[in-house]
Image (cartoon, rainbow, N blue to C red):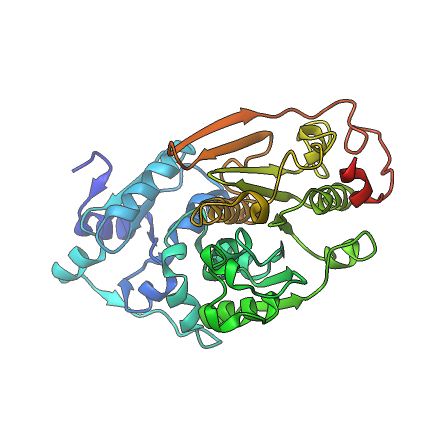
Length: 380
């Protein structure tokens, strides 16, 4: 037993005698089954992230309780690191509280009926302090643009749908071909000849009917790029050609939208986050990494060079991970870092990227030069 763990009876005594605040850190759906008498319900994630909002005075006497004592212990340690000096955790949690015959109460029913599907579907997210109810609602309000419903877009879209992103705008003007099925897991044999955006919408809606899917069967161009990026929080690049990558990069810098880049070839993949539009002079853009496109033929696409079918799955899932981190504002995104994946060697390595102070697009003080003929630019 840790020095700041106390028994349920001691917790009850502290609340009644010293005025300690008893806080049930379980999720709302867990508290609905019953709470220790006198407890105040604040989910662990919310408490850890917004402790000062709930308890301004770091000398407040706090006693935390969960189901079995594990989560309240972790929350108590987190609050102590933030300077709260009088924090204790109930050993054995609510289960021991009940076993010792201490009084329980049921919380008042909410004014509006609870969304059971929401709580059940994302229950594992709600347990994470870095996500919790606030983060899950933030994901539900988010809008992501997915350029391409192919090898990279397939796994990324599946995991964004599963994670609870509210709206996914998928842009792809292609149709499903049988050669796609080796890696583009959004589609099935029955979809051959069907527009990829329609196949993707059907598959993603089956996984998460709550997600709004805007299926756009258009080719990205300078004329429509800003319309398609309107209102978007994060862009995932699932393109397989350089003209579109440069166009997407330029538009994201201009509009201040983070771009999650991914690329695959044969057995190798790359992932990065280009966020120069919001962090000029600090974060690089795609042009800082590739000021000029490679000579024609030097970097063939999958249809020309081939690709191991599982490779886009790894890279696409990494892109989805970066997108979720950006939407939740957690962790350390791959800004200024290029992650390389070697499937044959099963190795990751990282290259540091710095913004180019002479970049014609994202250098501080540089005005947007306008969109260009990207096909001609990349043709050399």
